[in-house]
Image (tube, one colour):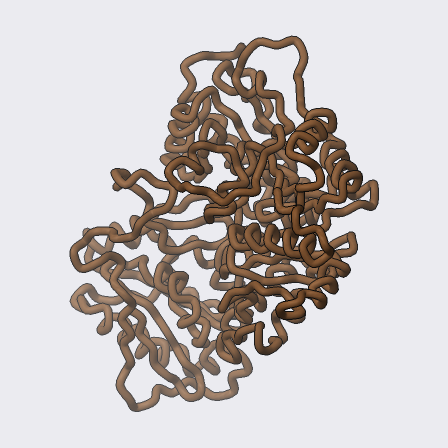
Length: 584
């Protein structure tokens, strides 16, 4: 329940629910509501720092010791709240009698006390306030949020990539910084950034404010008909961040859509240029480029392909640049990693004159955090140039700082001055705050579409592609990435985590520990073992992604040195507890 009231020209909001700590959940779950108020109530000690950061002159109320308060609420029958405002602190507790059983009654009592106890000392906390807080004579408005579960008590969500019979899962209700909290009040250090997208952490006030400001001005409009300032500015910003000749960006909604658009652009470009036979797209066999029908055709994984056919034609696969013997755990004297020789043979086997593009990830994330050896992407760039093939870099997981460079391809191509022809981005673009993806192309590819005989432009797009609010969010996220030097931070914290996790290689059930920046993989001997480790870590308050036999460690780029140290220790302990064998 969210209750709002007014004091002079200031607005006060506070949340109450059945438990004395759920106002924090409400405040974080409905930030757009709380962002309108000058004073917000938080009933969770761990969110005090975040409430202060929300700032903008807003005050807040929070519980100083959640566990103690929760216990005393049921044993000594009172609720204690610590009250303070921005820039000044009230040292006394506000104690409410337990007879105030209704959340609304408790909220009204807090409001009355705020006026009678604190108004004499000055204006109600809030930006540019010059009016002594005086309660308006009107009814308090009570806004009830939607129920946490359906009326039947069942979860009717169809959870993707999840067994239907899996009924036990976390219900997350809030997040702050690198931590998320569930509906039982437990906090978790998120070492997976949701799904590699929460790059600037949760509830960042600058991002929340950017979203609120744009949504309250113009939420969006169809870019097929008009321009919007956020979309225009974001396309310009992306072009400025890229080191190569990429100048124009098409916006869509997800990484999968970006793959579809990139493939379509590549094929249509060849068609416009008089090469309609060039339709084949090559990609690494272990790559992952999305879940749509054409995107899964770009992977050789049976797990993703089986039962989804008939898949579209025009896709073939290149050998993944990894040592299969290392991954299989088989004995071998020397690692054999595919490169130019194998790839050129595979291109020629398909017929180079039929190939439109090569689509690859600089680091294969879902495929197991596979990092090609130095120089391999440059080799692929040279092959594409030799045979007139476009190179598409899938930076959905790696773009905007994740690998310790602004873009993953820069690790390999940066020194050569070369770049991909088309680049797709998504996850880190908006930091998980809004769905948005981008396809950025060379200037000459863009201008070629003026010669499309049917439209004179690109015959592709989506209603909400380049959503103005999402673009405003992306601009705020990029401000944070650049302003807070998160690319450099990702490199530093990634090195710290790799150093801390590297000793795990000595365990017989750990195949490898590898990573680049804050995209790290701990490869276990089996998928089952990886799942056990992830569940053990979760029980200790750390969330890690287990996909196949690989544990992916990819925390928000804002992770602190102390949080990284704690996360590495919990993961190492979880591996130790889950593995029966000792050192090799």
